[in-house]
Image (cartoon, rainbow, N blue to C red; front, top):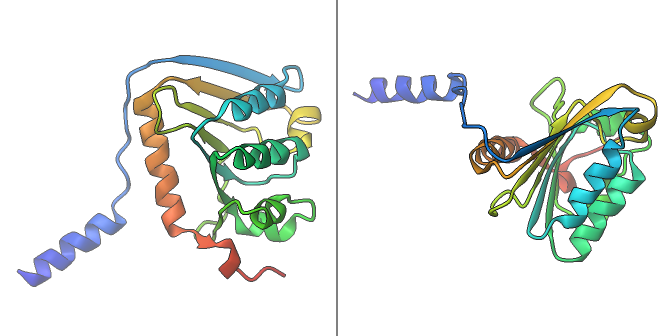
Length: 183
C-alpha cells in the first residue's frame, strides 16, 4: 500500500499539467509594435489597477513601466514580481533591483533555462480582471525597435483564474530576491 501511494505521489509530481479550456468572455485588445502604442495601453491598465498586480517578466528595463509599478505600489495596490534570474544577472539596465528596494516583493525563477513569460495580471481576484500578455518584453526596445505583439484581455474571470494559478505555481518555485546571490 505504501509503495502504491509513493508511486502515485511521484507520478502526480512529474505528470504534465492538463490543458485548460475556458469559454470566451470579455474583450480583447491587440496591439503590434512598433506601429501601435502598446506601452501606452499597458501603462493605462497599470494606472487603473486597484487591488493587485502580478508580474512575470523576462526582462524589465522600461522606466515608464517601472514608474507605473512603483506608483501602483505607492497607492496601496499589492504588486508582486517574478523575474528570470539569469536575465537579471546579464542585464545591466534591469530595474528589478530598484523595485525590490522600493518594497515590491520580487522572486527570481531559477528552475528553467529561460523563464520567458511576459505577463501582467491586474486585479486578478476582482470582477473585472485584466490579463496582459504576448511577446512584448517590458523594455523600451519592445515599443520602439522590435516587432512585438501585446494582448490585453479584460473581463474573463475563468481565464484569469488559470493564469493566476500558473503564476502562483511559478511563485512557489521561485527564490526570494533577498536570498539570491547576484554577481
